[in-house]
Length: 112
Length: 114
Image 1 (cartoon, chains in turn yellow, orange):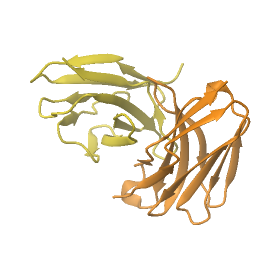
Image 2 (cartoon, one colour; image 1 turned 90 degrees about the horizontal axis):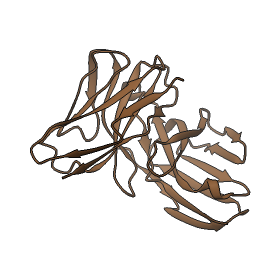
Image 3 (cartoon, each protein chain N blue to C red; image 1 turned 90 degrees about the vertical axis):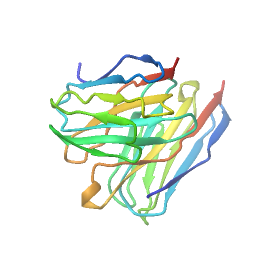
């Protein structure tokens, strides 16, 4: 079935450690996005990519990095520079014709 | 930056009641979207609106794109227990440089008492 797969479902980070969240889609979508969700908050955009090998910072990019080497994949790295990484991370994608974004089931990141 | 005010923040209703929630923006949007999120899962698209004044239904859900392009409404009729969740509105701006960026409301938490 077509969809967006995020892994792992739960992730724990130690102090000073970088961790990478995976996002894969088989919908042939051009654009992909990473959002952060905190309790009682809306979704805040971290990074987005409209085409392969190109990406732009969103509203809260500090402490995060991404790559877009393949159309299907848009991994997010939470670096040690991100001092408050505990959150629910959501990946989304859509076509370049501005169709609605569709979401994966998220990764919950916690600090050990 | 753009801001969306979504209200109410939470609702506690009895099964069978109708529900209304809305979002207002400080700027114009070209598209309004409504999503529902269950605990521990990603948001699922309910309704997409593309024209000012548009009224669209999806089963018991009805949403409207405000005439001013600065607001949208979602109504749920005859609520059932599985309607429980967080409902988010999202707006997409008209400006070409950020065509793909959405601004999200903070959500409405709906609880339905059987």
